Length: 128
Image (tube, rainbow, N blue to C red):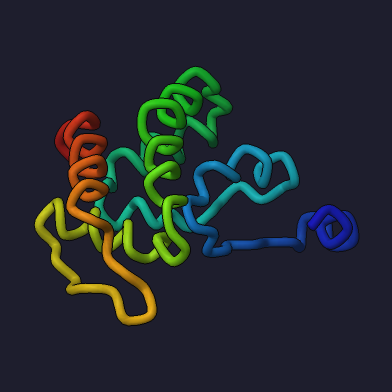
């Protein structure tokens, strides 16, 4: 990434789809990539925008708080099983009232316990 950016300079732009891109956002911004695609935006739009604006303003207090309160616990759920990068987004959408149906095999949906854990994280962030 660094070598590509060094070669292209201001002509370089990248908008990628990393699972939970927020945890990479500060590092990518330091490389000259100020934007990213947020999967969390699909079910937590206010939170995703608050995080994006904090990254854009170099508001480390807010980004660190949101990482600790939401994104790192979210990752702990997501990392429980291979394929959960998709499953957790579908579960989040379902929990806020936008059911997209189950994941397709070979992926599996979150367990009831994991859905409850995600629901608690969502509720703790307030209205979206």
